[in-house]
Image 1: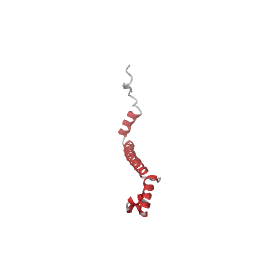
Image 2: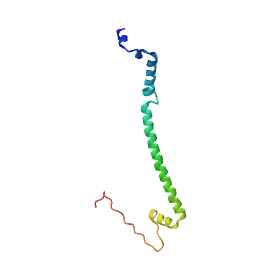
Image 3: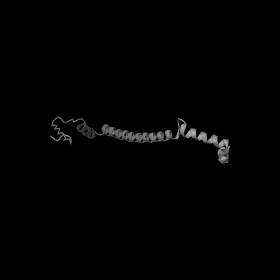
Image 4: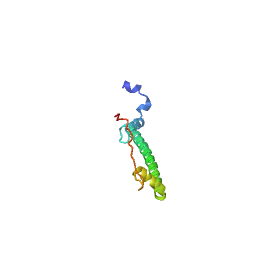
Length: 104
């Protein structure tokens, strides 16, 4: 009983004890605790950045597609660079680039 006399009045209050237990459960023991929420926010930010990156890539590809559909010069340039196509009266020489790993 001497121990209870040294505890302040607000620690003996049943509402304070109930609130403290509730806060403990909600902050640390619940399935949606504060640490889980922080991890979910990090993942959400990562996914939003990924979405923005892929949206920009899709817009760039759509722009390139429209240019390919509308401009024959762009189509010819794309065919020559990407698919190594040539005209009938041309010869195509491919020169491989030296890689840094192979010394000989």
